[in-house]
Length: 331
Image 1 (cartoon, one colour):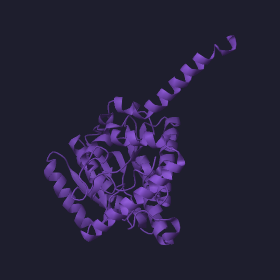
Image 2 (cartoon, helix red, strand yellow; image 1 turned 45 degrees about the horizontal axis):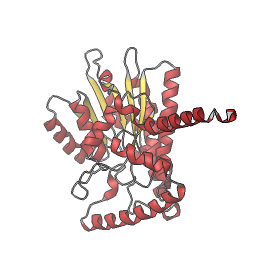
Image 3 (cartoon, one colour; image 1 turned 45 degrees about the vertical axis):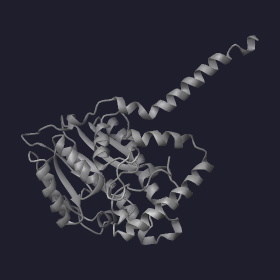
Image 4 (cartoon, one colour; image 1 turned 135 degrees about the vertical axis):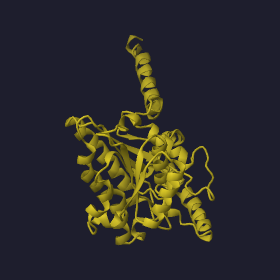
């Protein structure tokens, strides 16, 4: 019997470990956002944020929420006419804030086929303290496809947009973000597809790359004593097209998603699931056997195919907004 006396202790340690692992994804939700520390005036110049891919969806929502929280915002996209419309809309909603546009094709810039200095000219005189790398997504129909069903050009363009463009932009802008007594934030909008689900191979791989980049950048800057927070947020399904999919608990509105993302700033991690309604199913998917995940993928592929047919009939292109559909099949 004496030899079994250690079993209660082992059991207690095991239960504590399980409880810790189950609660770990939710620790960031009890911390207050640290976004305000990046809203400092420098030499009389107010703080500005740059949001890439801000002409629609989550990017536009983040631009609006940043303005609501006191930042002037530069919105980036590749269509200057559409950006002007968004700028006008944001200015009407937030009359106390300033907005500028920055035009550039993420794919062309990611491949080096277009000059960076022309696109970045609007930032020259600004006190830039927040960079939001939001541009990205799966701009193809069908969204779910096997690797060999995509052309070399489609794969290259998607990886350039999702991974190379934000990497190069962060590298170029990092010297502008840093300075004595000036904290800054680099926010990378990722996806829960970063775990590499079937049928989202190169998209998921690009998002996993951004997580690794965020972690590495955060550690490098800490070692160098540079006060720049780097945070990658893993986003699940978002109702960017409310006429097709009304917001639900596990499929929040753009506004709710933007608020959740900015609320996680200062959470103490380099990678986080920002919305609780995504963190809960992700926890269960973490515990799901691989075989069941495969069955989940098949069900989701069928469901998404039906939604794409409906979208085509209504002449709505589902692939224009980042992370709109890349979710429940992932962990």
